[in-house]
Image (cartoon, rainbow, N blue to C red; front, side, top):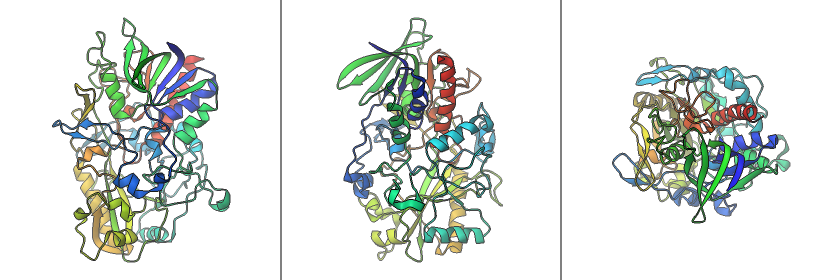
Amino acid sequence: MDTYDVIIIGSGAGGGTLARHLAPSGKKILVLERGDWLPREQPNWSAHDVFADNRYVSQDTWYDAEGKAFQPQVHYFVGGATKLYGAALYRLRKEDFGELRHHDGISPAWPIAYEELEPYYTLAEQQYEVHGARGEDPTEPPASAPYPFPAVSHEPRIQQLADDLATAGYHPFHAPCGIRLTETDAPHSTCIRCQTCDGFPCLVHAKSDAEVFGVRPALEHSNVTLLRNAKATRLETSPSGATVTQVVVERDDDEERYAADVVVLACGAANTARLLLASGNDKHPSGLANGSDQVGRNYMFHDSVAVLALSREENSTVFQKTLGLNDFYFGSDDFDYPLGNIQMVGKSQAEMFRGERPGETRLAPEWTLERVARHAIDFWLSTEDLPKPENRVTVEPDGNVKLTYSESNTTAKKKLYGQLRSLLGKLDMNDGHLIHRWAYMKNSIPIAGCAHQAGTCRFGADAATSVLDTDCKAHELDNLYVVDTSVFPSIGAVNPALTAMANSLRVGDHLLERMA
């Protein structure tokens, strides 16, 4: 049985970032990834292949609360979910780290303050080459350094949208983008600013994902090994139950076992919980690290909706995801509770709608899908999903995930939608008319769209109410850590990837001290 200093299970925003951070230490590191390299192929840039045929979506079967099977929108590749994310790399607001009262409940405080994570946010922005502009968003938290790269410019129709919002008294800002773009030197830019970015794999590796900026730099060090198509199925412990002694792996239909002084989980909120629950033994009868009965609970995934507005003039924008609006993040003039974030999403293409549910757009006959796509300006609305113990991951007898979930913050979600709807007449769009965009959720079960999943192994100071301590080590095991979004006590209302990256760097520093 091969033995390592560190085994990292998962290679996405948490695991890939950690691998890079630990690699220069010289410690013997094994990264286990249940998927393979995402193929570089022409379908990477095909809307039909990606959105209609779900070419890169896993073949997993999960179950909802009623036992109905569904296919979750998850991706298993080197780099994890970041291979198909929109690379919107936001910091949580400073206030998100404290307790926030919402209309429908409480968003709990984190066990660390924003100030503790801030240096790691800065480091993550540098490592992932984030483009942005400080000072435009009135809700942004303090930062110790400017963005490492200038903001991605708006194309003319989006610049007009930004100008119209500013004229109306709002504060649009350049969204923080993780793309490898050099606008001042296009011939040498890795990114070509194409329309197939948000939700697509990048054929030219121009997206700041965890393969490009995590795993590949880590593998430049001879002490780091990547094992692909290796699914961790169980963790085994010492007789006392105090340490993880073996990681059981399924690879090529065979069982393999690996050992390490430190084991780190970064499988995603659902699968990290699944692995812990599936690893129960006599010392941990309810699942590993689950003496608090908190493993799998408090599942969150952002109460998001993708909508498009119909611009009176055609929208010729190619790279649309450059603008954000947080004026309603903490409330509005007529609502004293947080609402959430509005940002642009990748530009609609007619092929995104084919094979999905075009009838549900309820368009007049003259509005063909092609015409809709030409006139569409696409928005993504995120409202904070509040943690509820009954929203949880459990494991079915066949070993698959069961996801029990009900919405937690519907009043704010409706209010945020209403705010955007009321703005349209001021923005040269068809007044008050929004169309739900189904490109990100082909499955009829809303919980299938789980790109922003979080919360199933929250960290905290109290072992009775959390799974992990403030260093993200399991309370009950001396050598087991978690660095994905499952550690989040709350999720805020912005994309979680940068926070996962930053926290992984923070935990990485702790591990370097531990192994010194």
